[in-house]
Every structure is written in C-alpha cells, then in structure tokens.
Amino acid sequence: MSPHVLILGGTTEARRLAAALAARPGFRVTTSLAGRVTRPGALDGEVRVGGFGGPDGLAAWLREESVDAVVDATHPFAATITANAATATAAARVPLLVLRRPGWEPGPGDQWHPVPSLDAAAAVLPGLGRRVFLTTGRLGLAAFAGLTELRFVVRSVEPPEPPLPPHTDVLAARGPFTVADETALLREHRVDVLVTKDSGGAATSAKLTAARDLGLPVVVVRRPPLPEGITALSDVPAVLERLDEALGRPC
Image 1 (cartoon, rainbow, N blue to C red):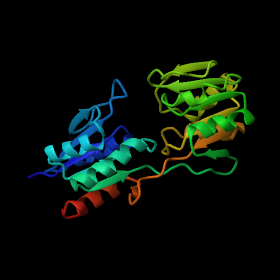
Image 2 (cartoon, one colour):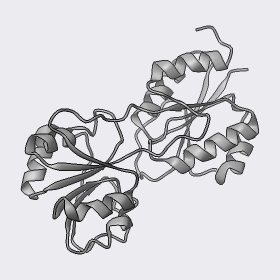
Image 3 (cartoon, one colour):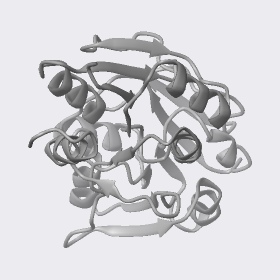
C-alpha cells in the first residue's frame, strides 16, 4: 500500500513539500488547510479544508485515513495546531515531523526589540513611536486596540478581524514586496516604528531591510516554543530524508 502523508499546510514550504512528495511514485499526499484564506493557490495531491475538531478529531482522522506520517508545515505562530498535532500523532502512533523555516536574525544597524507576545509588543510601542506599521497578520489585533494615541497602518490579504485600534488604515495587498515597495510605504505613511512576527524567510523580509535603511525601531514578536520533545527541520530536503527514515524507505 502507498504511504499516506498528511501535510498541515498554509505556507510556501508546505506547498513545496506537497509538490516534491506528489512527484514521487507510490505516495499519497493530503494537504490540510485551515480555511482562513478564501482563495488558496493550487496544491499538488489531495486537499482538505477545515479543522479536525481538536486533537481527538485529528487522531481519529489519521486512523480512518490510514495516515503513515504527518508533517506540520504550518506558520511558525500556529501554536495550537502544532500542539494538537503532537497530541494526536502520539495517540494514533504516527510519526510527526515539523517543518519550520529559520527565523530572522538581526544584523548591523538593526534596532530590534524582541518581545514574547503581541500583548508585550503593544506594551512597548508607546515608548518607541507614534505611527506604527503593524504586520502581525489579521488576527490578534485586539492586543493593540487600547492604544488610542497611536496611528496604525495594517496590511492584510484578508480583512482584519475586529477590534482594531481606533486610528487604523487598512491596506489590502498580497506580497511578496520589494525593499523599494516597503521603503515607499514607510515614507508615505510617515511610519516611525515597525511591528512584526518572526515569520522568517525571504518573502516578507524586505520590510526589515527598509526599516534598517530608514533607521526605524522594529518590535519583533518571538516564536512560541515547540511542544516538548519536538524539534524542527528547516527545509524540504531535510523533511524528505527524515520521512524516508520514518517510513523505512531507501534514501
């Protein structure tokens, strides 16, 4: 029987992994999407949209669909999904691999202020600037809703979920963006502080370069820790190699 791999997706890395596995003979690949983006791009293999009903529901699905391995390739901040995957795979006795792109590292000239959460980011903002470019995604903006004296620019593919800060301009746009794009945006809106999550990767790093070039402080929300006993692999080739080991296939 062909091995069945479930990818918990939603990232560029998940898309690349699905394509790599679908190109291999004798693999069944299913990518699960949470359904938060209304028009996801095409994916290789099978696609499942929507939640599983928590770890118990996911464990039951793994058994029903005879899944042989799970790869969590969700966003680095999808902590609940990752925790559920760890619990469910342990219950179903299915190997779990976690694919995470490396986080960003500050370089010369960066003025980074690392914080552990969105609430902590909101707490330090008043001391850093008055006009904020908020790039933490459309969820979780309630953490900043009480900052009534600051002005925010929020960029999002989908409409952000309320509550929002009272003085907020929402920009509907989809990346990737160049350094020139980001520099122009920061200047146009007279931004004096940037807030971002440590998503990692090159696709969204141009804003960090633009902020460095303009001498702006950057509040960086650190990633949540992985569940105990789980370590992340940094790229698709490493996952493919580990999957072969887990499934007893020749490398």
